[in-house]
Image 1 (spheres, rainbow, N blue to C red):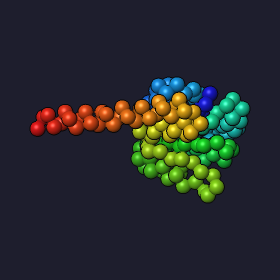
Image 2: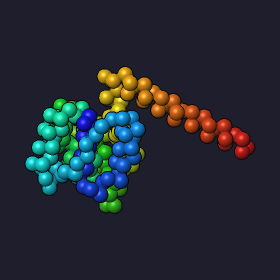
Image 3: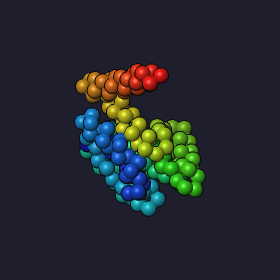
Image 4: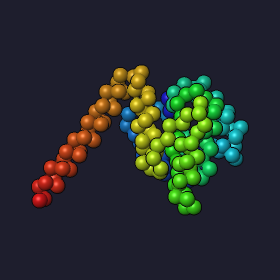
Length: 163
């Protein structure tokens, strides 16, 4: 496995689903686990160590509310950690966003957008990191972005035709 993804709760699966699809599209292997910084701290520590020993290069941690999971992971590894904040009813995800983005100096966590957009962008950021040492992956990422640009141009063309 190259990317290890931790969900703070199984209810966070919908947040990362598109990200998993993107990793598969790029041929990037991953492992997905549910673990909690608060409810299963020993499990979290064990999974981090096992992931590192298994070849993980990047961690993605999806968490809501207090959202300590990304920080706990970052505190226990020197590998890149990407935090995905989950929206909540109480504070619309602001609590999770601030929890993840406000890491103390020296223990960085890359933070992406809230929710499903963040889940997709976390996968793409992990791919970008991995592409630093994988030319084939880099070429696929360049192609992916080119296709996005082409879709924008096509949308513009169709819109102009309606005028």
